[in-house]
Structures are given as structure tokens and as C-alpha cells.
Amino acid sequence: MTSLNQWLNQQPNQDLGALIDSLAQVCTEICTLVRRGPLAEFQGAAGNTNVQGEDQQKLDVITNDMLIAALKQTPSCRAIASEEMDHAIEANPNGQFLVVFDPLDGSSNIDINMPTGTIFSVLADLPDASLDDKFLQAGTKQLAAGYVLYGTATILALTLGSGTHFFCLDPATGVFELTESNVSIAAQTQEFAINASNQRFWEAPMQQYIAQCLAGAEGARGKNFNMRWVAAMVGDVHRILCRGGVFNYPFDHKDPSKAGKLRLLYEANPMGLLIEQAGGKCTTARQRILEIEPSSLHQRVPVVLGSLEEVNLIGELHRQFDAKKA
Ligand code: F6P
Ligand code: MN
Image (cartoon, protein in one colour):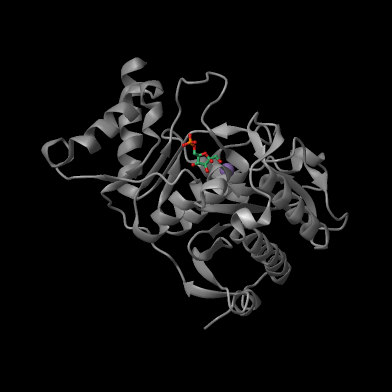
């Protein structure tokens, strides 16, 4: 067995390794808290909304505070941004890394004992930029990205830009052990994930794609599809890393002020790097996510990610649609 610590010691950037180790440590504490379920007395709403206008759960706030406290004690961390904070905050003046995270993705799953997770992305500091602007870097610049899924087992999925790797937390020892190196997503799949309740708001090419999947063996695709929706991106992405598939949170017309539901810096970018490093693809249906130049900390983007063949087909349907409109 190779522990996360041993694995990080073999990586070229030791400072980055120490930062990842701090993140993994605090995630084991978050795991302990989440695992207590209703016994922790932290379930339910916190009574306030975050900058996105979403109701904050008590655990959103608590896990956010836990990550901040850990990163402030990690000298290499320069600044911190989070889904739960309007603006970035200082960590350590001499730090070289920026850490941006979603402290508890899928938090509507907390009260029903379903999976949640912590998603994180690490960037290099931009010394001359203001605090918020430091984080406005394209996803291609990420030095590391990962998530910890609090599911039936607790799994860390991690990339330092060279492959995506799984580590499973051993509850008996509190140590993350390497369980799969260089995860690889099958190019073909027969499984899709989308919140179908938004169907009437989707654009025509997404309607067309899902209609083809639903038509199954009798339709244009000539094969049957299955559908899954965990309601926590971290769970859907983990399934895709494990057995392929495609995840869509597409552009829709439900709220014209929002380009999509998911956030670029702490959801789409880290997941995009993990997916690409496993041989999959991550786009808005029209553009590679990792090449987007961010314009604000909490920017939203449409997300289409997973197996190559499906993401390419969805891209092609959008290209044809746009070409007809032009
Ligand atoms: O963080 C946003 C999020 O909770 C994702 O984890 C998840 O994929 C999505 O929203 C679920 O959205 P909906 O509630 O619309 O199904
Ligand atoms: Mn989230």
C-alpha cells in the first residue's frame, strides 16, 4: 500500500505536496463531522444565503471555517476563495499558492444521508493582483485539483497535472491509501446525467441530444442509455471517473442572468482538470472549460463533461445549431 503522504513525497513539488496534505487532513475532519449525521446537531439551514443567493446549510458554514483555519496554518497558502464567501481572503503573506474551494458540494444531500464532497483547486499566486483578481486564472493554470467524496467510502480524487489518482480513507487508521493510479475514462458510454426537470428551458441541441438517448436502440444512436443523477456534482463526476458516462448542467433559459448553474473556479475547473487528466473531455458544449478566462470569482458556466464520444457529439450538435442560426 502507498499512503497519500508517501505518494506526495515522490512528487516533484514538495511545497505543493505539503499543501495537499493539509487539505486532505482537514477533509478527514470534515468526514468525521459529516459521518455523525443527525448526531452532530449541525444539520439544517444556517438561516442565511451565500453570495449565489442559495440557502446556506450549517455544515456549509462550518466546513468553510474548518478549511480556512487549516489553510491559514499552512504557510505556503497565500490566499483563499470559496463558494461561501463573497470575496477572497488573505492566508499567509509569504505563501506561493492560492486555494479556491467548494467546502461542501451537494449540501442539499446532507439532511437525507446522501453523498457530499469538498472540491478544491490550487493556483500559483499572482503577486501584483488584488486579492479577488489573483484567482481569475484560466483552468489550464491549475497546479492541482481534486475532491474528497464523503460517500459510502471517503475517496480523494487528485491530480497534480499528470494523471488522476484515487486515494481511499482507511477509517481504522485515518490514512488515505492509493487505490487507483492513472484513472482512465472509457471513450464510449451508455449512461447520462442531467436534471430533466429543466428540460423545457434547454436549448434545441441539448433537447435533441437527450431525445436521442431516450430513443435508445430504436433511435439515431442505436443503443439504449441509462440515467443517473446524484444531485451532488462530486458524486456524478466520481461515477464518471469510475465507469464513464456524461454529466450535463447545460445552459438554460430558466434564469437569463445565469449562464449555467455551476461555478467555474471551484466546480467546473477542478472537475475539468480531473476529467481531462483521466482522458475525458470538459466543455460548455461550445468551448473547452479550462481555456475560459474568468471574469469574476463566482462566475457560472454550462458544463458538459465525461466520455469523449458523448462530449464530442454534444459539441457537434451545438455547432450545427449555431451554424444554422448564423
Ligand atoms: O453545487 C451545485 C450543485 O449542488 C451540484 O453539486 C449538483 O450537481 C447540482 O447543484 C444539483 O443541481 P439541481 O439541484 O438543480 O439538481
Ligand atoms: Mn457545489
